[in-house]
Length: 508
Image (cartoon, rainbow, N blue to C red):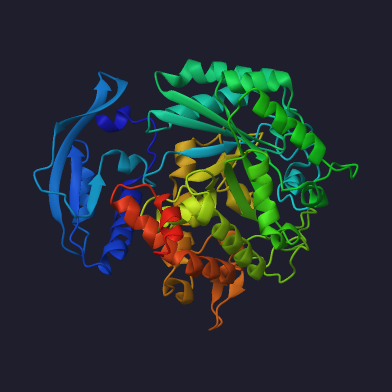
């Protein structure tokens, strides 16, 4: 009997049925306002059972068509998708909903993505606003907060085998990642090749930049690693909160690391925290990154609340009601003015030359594409984090006991990230929005931003309003005409950078 050949049931029949109902309702929400009749396209042949289960729960009209595609020669991907049978219906100016058999396996429709913590909450700096260093208190009884070779191999093998895509991204995060020796990452790459089985492996690593050396940069360049460097603008801004454990500033060492990256031609981008100090100097902030040749910039607003836990942790999460903000938190007004001021400079002079992650994500949402960052997506939960000891959490910003999914030694990544707890975590991002947000004309643009910042009340007293809502609304309202123009350019297969010429011609 087939049942005797099944080692483990990952998802029960009831769980699959419930998820089909949830997906049908979610899809209905997407189409009910537009009144569109989408074409549901099944990828033959594996999609048929799931497609039948899904569409029978639709309460709106749809048309059905099928395609047959292949990227495999036997059991190995050849990296080239071939169309064996095309659609019969015309898809011109129609919404297309693609259904494939992997949707049963991966209901997020995203690659499984887990940030890896090779050193846990360990760092050579002690930045005032770091939300992560206090997580060491969760592991007081473990003497070394470093990942061992056994766990490294287990994760790499399982992570690769859990993917549904031919391209796989590994993200190394900290703590400070470079506190592990270079030999650790060389071993990681050996293991990646051992288990890749023809798939393409990419790596990115986040660092404070202070420990970079010639040897490190040679390795990063040779192996095409993307490096994210944490730097908070000019020296007077950066050194305000980013100091070492002795209270000494770090800017000079960070800049030395950046110079080494540039010397060896390593691809890198900047992760800049926007706080109560530097938020008041947006142009000085932005121009600094242009002066040092950084073309890819992520601006991250810092918002943290105080909630004293019994184990010594100080920061709050969802459901821990406290009005007390850490002093470095940016205000909504600061955030809105900061974004608008930089956007004004960018849209006039720098489109297509400098890439601001939030601006790119906003444009993506404006045209109905995946924004690329979880904070601006409709749902979340597809990007988790694994600690140095194998503990897995829902998100890097939710490393709290209540958001622990399990440990890789006792549960598979698939069980944890496609299980009911994580699915609910991801869907709650939309479900928990107050009515004010769901009725907002800019909901499509921000989707409520990160749930960790939703601790305010609406004008009607409903919980769940994002603390930064006022700032985001100011930004979206300001950029709307520019986004509409760039959306039209993209829809007509023209570069969004055309907006700069349109502005000079006074047509916007």
